[in-house]
Length: 395
Figure 1 (tube, rainbow, N blue to C red):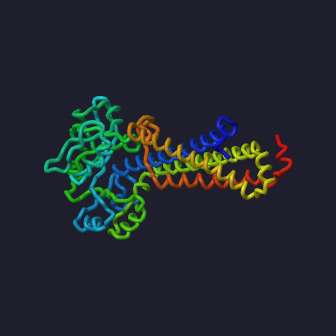
Figure 2: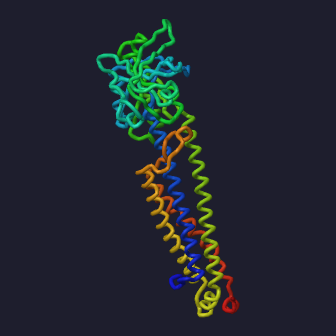
Figure 3: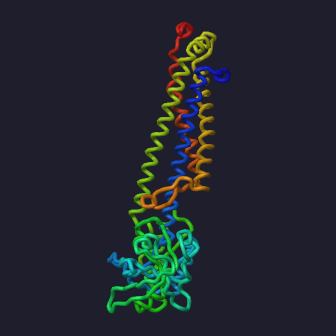
């Protein structure tokens, strides 16, 4: 019915229907791939800085000045016995004032040791290097954020003073070894990285006394389960906190993105479905005389409905083919060449991230087929009311 319509009004309607499905599906795929890209990128930034789980001393206070814990062989073995734990690294966090020739800024110095996973953190480095802290000699080098470097007009190899407000007050002369950037104010405005040995000396702690342990797991979907399991297994004076509970404002923002994309999903599918309904209605009106003639020759209503539904579904599948192709090509180009930039102060990153989530791609295609296929039954019901004699006379 639709193959011999070259140059006709029907062919134009078919093209509009295909374009409608193409744009709808491409927009959905791109939206979800960008959403997953945002979520993955932001989560990885948080996990790279604080681990999936944090083990520290159980305390009521929310102060960044931790109560110390003793890292014993039995404690580390307890963590390593979990097959889902891929890495654990010790840390100390201490508040301090950093002073350069341009001013003074309050910061949090996170001391890390030889077990710090520098490979995981290298993606955040923008200049210089991340020193191998935890060697035999305590290092006076630090890694600061790009925001602090701009604020205090610092660069790699610059020397500045670090003051620790305590009794008695202490200070250290330190050197900038590297500059990092996560794009997230929660970290870039506060954290600099230094040698864990430096903070142990400042606190008069032995080498096995730290502020806490960052724990990394193989699958973030198991985070709640691992949090509960570790909490119930480790000594009662230790607390286990997931990154989502430590930084709820970041993960709540990600949930808000989920809601926005779901609203977009409903709107786009609704528009595509209405477009197909309109296309079939127009097609039925144009083919009214043909419907009447086929009915006069003995064609049943069911047969005629099947013809129009088949035509509609054939157009849907063409739209799906084009929509998938356009979306995947666009996402690949953005993933490879980072064509679309972003304002890092608002979006935590310099470009639109892409994460290819193939199950979602399949679900979106099936969803479009099912929902649009079901909506096609609405206009074809009109065929049952078409009278052969009146339809043949229809003009």
